Length: 340
Image (cartoon, rainbow, N blue to C red; front, side, top):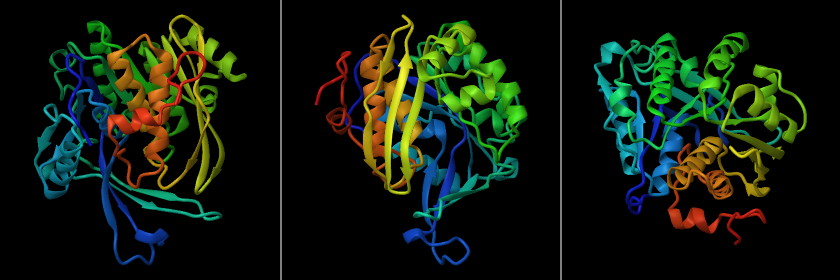
């Protein structure tokens, strides 16, 4: 739902795989459903959709098979205002469209995700697939999640190439410390993250992830300060969740900026319609704000929080909202965040 781009704001570049999501309607079980609802989803593309919703240029870098399912995903991404100029199209014999199945739960039955993505066009990419030196100049940031290097050797090599190119060009790197145990082992993820994160400027994470992969422990303030000192991060943002039931959740965040000051986002009580893509919407809301005002941590955290809250109320992985709706849901704290 894009209503026009903000003049003069540089683009945010995101890199990662997207899939088509297949969901049985009305909380039905996969084993007996007769129909499936189709919608697109993928961490970096989800974030790009939120960035575009804020009127910030969002360019998604990926590989899609030139088949009806690939074109379906591209059509929907374009309708949300995402720039696909850097998407590579490959013939069907070079890789398929990745899929995943979501079985939505209701307490006490949890939701479940089943991947069907092996051999996708993105997973089969060769190192050097993208000319990052021509893609990245002038960008406000490069955004990648921990899912991308987990998909295969080619995506892992290309993740490192993109980050190194961004570092050389002075483009800030934003990394979401997502870990998917169905894609790789904790040991393999740790080896990769330990190499990536010291090259990152903005990190989205949780206390649990920093403990698991970097041995950083303590309360939120301690974790933020140790992440800053040990990992050299300019901005660290920790997600917080309470009361996680199928249809009710409290969402919060706490962050530390370049000046070492801690900014705590507001707690939000949210009625959950679909929680998938919520963290991606937060990252997109934050990075959309960052592209306009990189030094305004309070405002950017508030935009991320609002985008995340609204996303939880919308079916599918993509946020569907206007900038005005996101700003109307923005709560600023006493430190300078917008007051409703």
